[in-house]
Length: 267
Image (cartoon, rainbow, N blue to C red; front, top):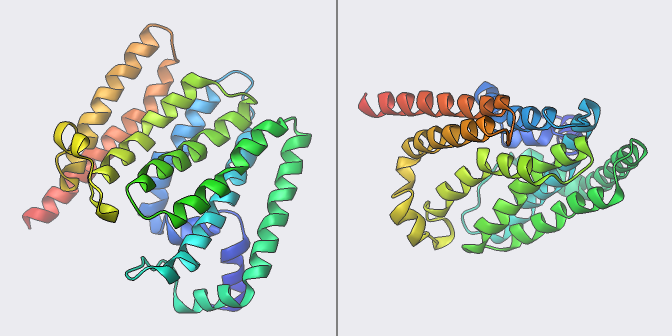
């Protein structure tokens, strides 16, 4: 990979995320099902929704997220004995050589998008709240114990709700909670029983998910229950019926993944 391609990787919004977190067709599909479609559908069903603000809001939150990713992948790994390597040695070398330039470009991009959102009518208070994502991510990258799971849940909450709040111009509790339960809570439960950082939730492993290996069965049960709750909420006019669509997609995706894993296991 050339220096210029590596610089594009580190500086162009969202390229870094797809290169390191959502690789290939499977990764893009997972991102669409677990993040983009739920955020878009819940946001689009709200009053005063703006598609332009939604898109810029997603880019805005990913600017902070990717700075956190870069810090984790390039700086935090230096302090770990068994780090997860998401970048090649060439990419890490480019980062070390141009890291101050990379950070400067990212900050300029953030300033530009912030001004753009402000002129579009987004309140400064909203921009400040989601700018705090970077601070939360820096804490996350330095904490290596069970509390990391709580910080990660906060990070997911910020990432999932940012496009919604920016696109509608307000903090609306119900759609924010719906987004939280559509995926972040699922991942929080799974990570809590995985045993990472030598931590495993006794409560969740006893009453919710006995082991990380059973996570696909858990997802099927979770989304089946969540679908029933969302249908009930729609029936009682607490939310539009179309909100169930991303839950159905996640349920179907969980069933397909479970069957594929089972077939692989039985081979």
